[in-house]
Image (cartoon, rainbow, N blue to C red; front, top):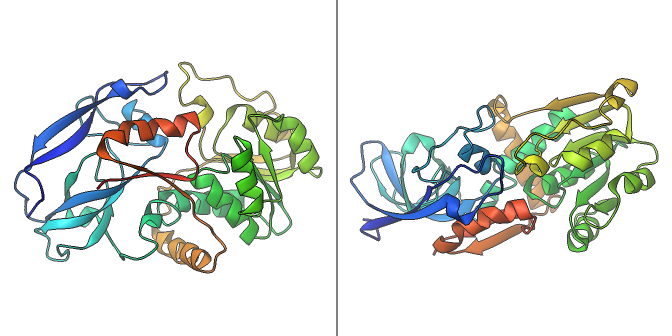
Length: 336
């Protein structure tokens, strides 16, 4: 039994390629709730996850994420409770994660959802135990390959991926410097997460501060931002450095692609490596990665901060927070 006769949804109403997202890019809609097909489950959505890649989906950018069209329900990963099931292995009342979208109810194939333990780490499956944590794990361990004593610099360090990456860098024996926007975020990085230093890109010169904090150069740069941060880091890389390109939020709202970093040729001078990556291809290692991350969380070696908004009507504005830098930690929204 469902709890409503209609399903409230947010539909895509515009293509924001080359500009900032706007609230008008989304349109509220009500759809009738139909019958479940064999093998499907009906999920009452309780928590939604927000990620910068959702803007790329709206722009129909291939490769990074699957595209979408105007008029479709805005896609999002989330967690909810099964309220009806025609799948033999999934019972009513179970908590599951899946591509639920911006709506109150989602009818999905039972094979496409992941059953979750209803414990204190439930929402962490949208953060450290979900795509953001796995991104930090494989980007740092497989691409960055830090060694004990390495200097590791992470841009976007107070964000969902960056905050996990800085803590993993410390677990692996690195000396970690975080780049974030604002004194509160930088204080959180040093005072709570234990970073060896933090750079406030809004109020400090990144290049100058990297010179002060990384006198021996940067061995691993984990980049979530691009732009000025990437260019400044390339000027300070150590011999045989590894530059991990995870994201480029500084360019997500620009109409034209920015020119390449002026200091890119330091890759040659320092015999360094610059490499981008996606999670696809690491699926067989997810279980091992999640077990390690769970252990680190249970032992207090990885702290998890969530920025939680509330209410169906606030869904579009919550996505916009990611691009204004207003969010602090993993951006989530809870539905009543």
